[in-house]
Length: 368
Image (cartoon, rainbow, N blue to C red):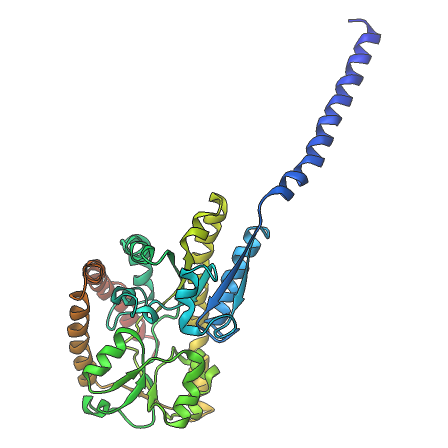
């Protein structure tokens, strides 16, 4: 090749390369702009922006929106903004909203089996619930159950072990529950009924006024962090522990199944992993903030911290086993879920005695 021809060839090759690069640069935004964008609504059972629970829903929406680069944006609605708190399940099922955030025991009227995916009295703690759902067959059963309602279920938060509740009288024996009207949802409420109390299911936003007015005599909610924010110390003076009824409560996000399956694979993966991030973040937040809130309740507001007696706890445990076995016998799905849950609880008891409980006892020898 002559020198002139070589120079002409290189010039043309350079121009061609530049042209391809320019087309690629111009074309990339055009392809990105052509990608479909999704706008979803999330309805919740919590007061808007409520610490821990409401903000947990906000965080989940933020994770999905930002991880997707805005291709899937989620707008959060607090309880009552778009639909009432306890109508979220139906709203997502029929497609009024694409996502809902709450606790599965609120939907026991749909199926008794839902309660196992929120909290079981004397059941699994937060770590164990995660183990059962993610690695013990719980997720598959949850999906099977919610598919009946056109939904896909996710664990999207956990409060950790809760407190036993707020009372205006001391609970010294099981007989002190007789005639008591107490806000407690789910399986815990059924156990209360066995003890002679009247369980009342109320959304979070209605609890304080009901307790203050005397419409209810006692209430449980979550734990010190949330309970301080609600100001329950202004309406009740005795604060009992431990929360036998909710040892590791899962907060759920349920998604309209058609909407979820209509997403491209990468967006479905973003939704899946955002749920897991939200689960861990909420549990970490409650763990970080509960003790300082408890100190404030006791030292600043004069709350009387009380422990349930061993006798009360033993009787509640007996009632709990009776209630759960009756629920499991109600229908095929409840029995199927209970069988899986109970098998996981048995193995968890074995490991917990050696692992978590064993370490806690060892640590207490040095740090009182």
